[in-house]
Length: 323
Image 1 (tube, rainbow, N blue to C red):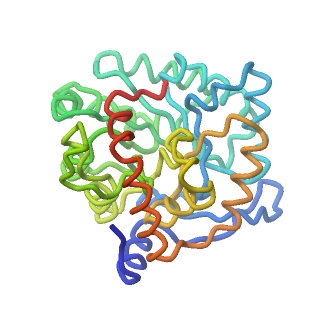
Image 2: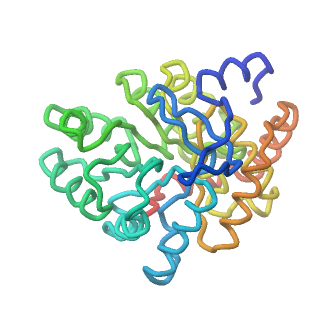
């Protein structure tokens, strides 16, 4: 599925797709494109560093910290992590890298548990690991099924506790992520006024609606066609993830096409795992050269990728946990 030029212009405006140059802490211009993160009003780089399994491939703390510092030096200002990325290890490494460099960095983490009574303790551990008094954004991590949403929404549950944390200035904003079921995320976004949302958005996940090849009926739709329009309508900041599908799509299209497809959607930033320093250099180079992909090219790319990969990715994301 592709979008018209008019729809693209309207949706990108809603999604904060105005691009500008970022001013570095020392006052120099990094030349890095930025967008506004929806109704949060925060301006962040269009490329974000992911702190999940790819980041955890750095073999020790020193190398991981050096990678984050390199990212910051090159102008990336959005850092993504989670409490269950190796039991706060990702957060601890990022906290070491951000020490003394917090200003101007948008820091997002995720709360994975579904026990409201445990939420404050876990977020306090995240604050300690990150060495900060306040996190910019805390997502409810990896929304799965309608039953999972019911747990999140329950009285005294995780969502209610996060709202209390926002009131207590432990976090500035609240979001929710999903790579599993677009319809459940759509429901969550319609019911609640989240500040942000993070979802799986790549060309391979579009198409094949109604196909019997898809083992999980919930995934016959896509986040792009079902959940993304709701987020845009409600002016939420949208973060794209699974851009390369953990390298699964690199055999089907070059990195620049995959990255530019996701960045050309009405999103604010794309989170990418970068397990080697050369990956950082290359992804930064691509982000700085970004130009929106023409709609006919997006249509051709998504058609080709979805035909080849969608069924296998739906199976992967059914049970996938990036921890």
